[in-house]
Length: 114
Image (cartoon, rainbow, N blue to C red; front, top):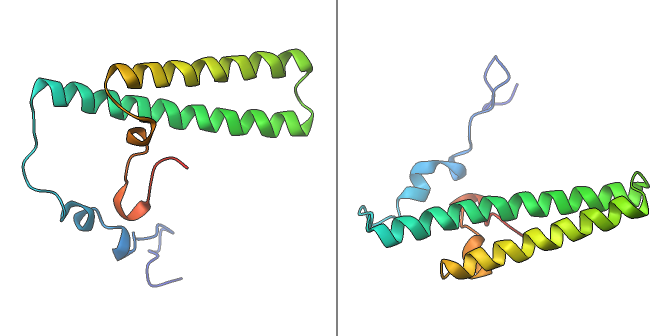
């Protein structure tokens, strides 16, 4: 059993991934103006939807390469994913967000999206 692993098998978070380290760079003040709250919420929601869209796209590619989808299913899935991507970009534009804004910085964990 490693130094970072408890008897229960649960591993401790390495020091490099501590939330307190990520919070050190914060100014201590949060801007709670209605515009910033709305844009921040939109950024979070759209980032999560974009993450899910990318995961679905990867799964669709795996299924397509594995031969578990017929031509009609491939066409439907491709069309749905393209429409979703278009809608995400449209909504991001409505909130003055760029695609790069949706790639949230998770501190020591890196960026949310590839």
